[in-house]
Length: 387
Image (cartoon, rainbow, N blue to C red; front, side, top):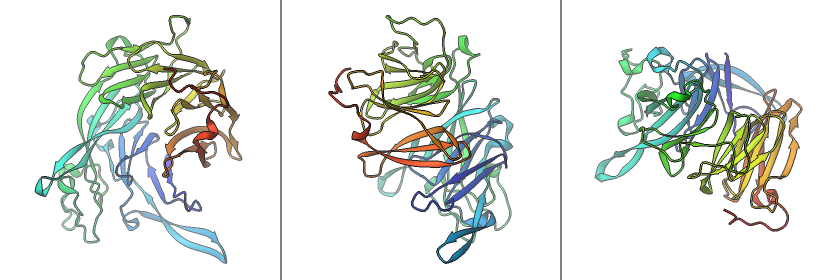
């Protein structure tokens, strides 16, 4: 398989909890924020895939595995899970360019008995390298009984299939025993006509208004999915006091989860910029590295803490509330036995006080670190009200 994804249970890291495979090369992957058993991915060929991790193992191809335990070997079978649904079967539903990002942007409310409402059908977007955005309605995602009857999730549940062998039009692209579906509902070109030659690297939705997007390309663009005017229309590379001669492409974007005004952007020239949502010029310009910065993330637990990674595997921690806002409070080359760190992401610990940093390395190794909030702050006086 060109792509293999391992899903791990951090409480038992001896063997993968799930193994996902795809016949196309995956370029981006994410999970549903409210249904963690649903996984979405985009491919280099322009298709979008979905996996429902609740599907029973016997519905998929299995392989034997041996686990070293106390007292000897423990044998087991692991399922090799092909996508529950893929858009590859329908050329009109595929991007013409590689998919850069997939993410959930909202939910459809369903009214049940007694007038109660619940979120059901998720809204997914996929963005390709030329800025074309597809909006998808996600339907289903129900588990299945042994007899083939679906356990419904309201109107999104799939009709019974499998006993009589009949396949409906909506079933094309789906695994035979799956109920999850994708239906393309809209297409938007995110780039203005003057920038149609740009290469899109990333997309972030404004936390306060999901109809507005920040697009990382030759610069950070601000668009409205409905075509309305936006202010500012773009975020510049320089301030009034710092002109630059070249225009480095954007590599990563991140809104501050603790302050939705703050937008962080990293660039191929190794710089990092901090913007306020309603101002075009950066409030901070930080030269972090001589290598391209590949990723930037705002801390989910500490305001003004920023994490960044460059192409050489150097990991940076910045405290923008410190006296010197542009100097890292931590900088180190992160390596493992399998190679340098190539990617990371940050999430809030289940206890709510610490951050979890997940790092991926060359050779396939994965590390999970717990970072206490006080350990990454600068020593000495801090001013969290500087903006």
